[in-house]
Amino acid sequence: MNIVEQIDKINMQLTVKGYKLTPQREITLKVLLENERDHLSAEEVYMLVKQEFPEIGLATVYRTLELLAELQIVQKMNFGDGVARFDLRMEGHDHMHHHLICKVCGALEEIQDDWLLDLEQRVATEYGFQVTDHRLDFTGVYHTCKNNSKQCKRTGKAVS
Ligand SMILES: [Zn+2]
Ligand SMILES: [Zn+2]
Image (spheres, rainbow, N blue to C red):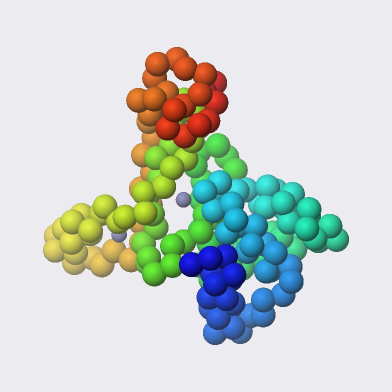
């Protein structure tokens, strides 16, 4: 699905809930979709939105992000650096994807497959509890970051 199709899809989700895709909301969505891998903070989204829509205010971007989070289109995440970051939920995936967070290069990689299905089944059987969502972030170090190179060979990120 390209970005235009993704925006159309989200537009339908908004309409169903009684919200309109205003130009401000559309540009915010576009920035999120274009930078999907980057897990942007509200300020970062704002800086990018401003380039195309200079008259937009930070408060509007905040409100849009909060609305998208409320509608479960994005997920507000904290990866331990004290900054709320916005992560798109995968179309058709009810459960949140997993993350690998490298402590050396700082990269944040996503695992889109749900690796928790067996565990969810076990929780259902042993606790009579249906899992509707979860978060699983792995913190660690890439092999490619361990050998004191300047740049992680896997992620291309600078090693500090
Ligand atoms: Zn993510
Ligand atoms: Zn799951």
